[in-house]
Length: 334
Length: 202
Image 1 (tube, helix red, strand yellow):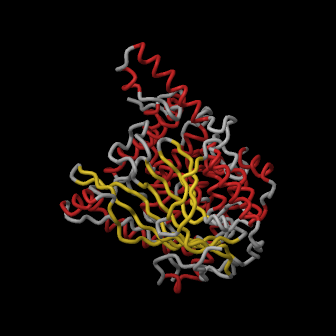
Image 2 (cartoon, chains in turn green, orange):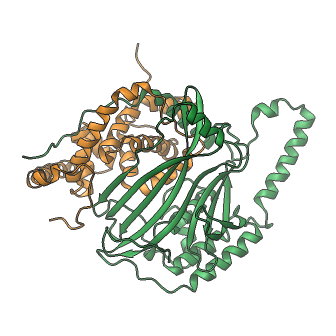
Image 3 (tube, chains in turn yellow, purple):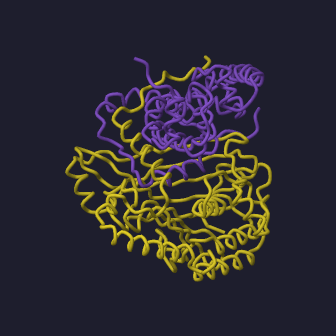
């Protein structure tokens, strides 16, 4: 009559993956410890002393240029101009009422995540397709529903390898539908954030709003977090674009189309040879999509099998708005 | 032969010996993995959250000395935060590990167990339909004490709350869980996947 109240017994960590997962973690820690653009020591050791000295001087010059594109530690002037424009566009949008108690901020997104499968010692790079819907109430209650689509392949060689391996199942079994009580989905309520860019910037840089390591790359990530799945009021969105327009290292990618073919403007931050792009609608400044792409040889050499140019992750936001229940949906972005 | 203590491994990792942190992972990953599975009902997600937990442990705490003999209470505490804010944590995890793709198959030993794991998943998801109705703070204490077998002291350390609070939350949570299970049993038994539930508790 009453249902089971104790969980099933603990199981082993999947033995076949423990070693790989350990290597991943150790490699990640090592790359954390390394300065961003350090040259590989193997390469340096092959250089004669004189050449090494010249190379070091050149590297310093490049590093200084990269760090100071605007002469004062700001972003690239082109990126700054586009972001200032986005800030003005955001400020002109009609104000939105934050979700009332019992209401939810709904966001629907379509994502691709690159994953690698290993079979018979051969690697297959493929995309996991995920449709995600989030309903988040002001009290942190809500619902998250995720559904897997059929995988696709990064290159035709990957698909051939998959066929040769007998079409092993690549789905991630990510289908899930979870509900959360108040406080279950803690997130910073954007309607309570300051709209003054300087004040908001301080809270972000102090890591008061969201925790994280120091540095401009992380600040760029947090700006993305606050634009994503939060339905930030126009004034807050405007402040976020203003902060991005002053952030060192931000560069302009320009006019792009997202994975659904919608036109937008992309700005990006490059870290560890991976370019993280935010793609927004220049008319409204709404966040349309995000993308991560490998743009150079990875300095830590941990993923040599992923070719330069590969998109690692791409997410398009296809619907967002305030709804009255965790079953109501919206099919357009504001 | 005695194995190297967590404290020594932690100190070596701090000193730059990253492989020492790898040993800590190999030692404790299974406990955190099972904890994350029990909180989510999803084995693959649990594996991702385990990696994120260890990465955040490194990033947030590696400058500190490990005071306890075992790193587990600290890891359980971080895992609890990771579970509480999955939206943020998984995003961070995907960024952190995007350069290090995951191998999803070629695991014969796992295939043999697949049926067991599916059964576990069904059982766990059913239990979570009831469990998720408890206030979050009671869920945390129950999951750590009753499911993962942490002592009151370790649970208090993991969650950063006094031992008295652990006791009272545990007592309240156990009682509430019994009531919910008894009341909701027959209708809930039919459900395999957690369904949306009312925001206001009955």
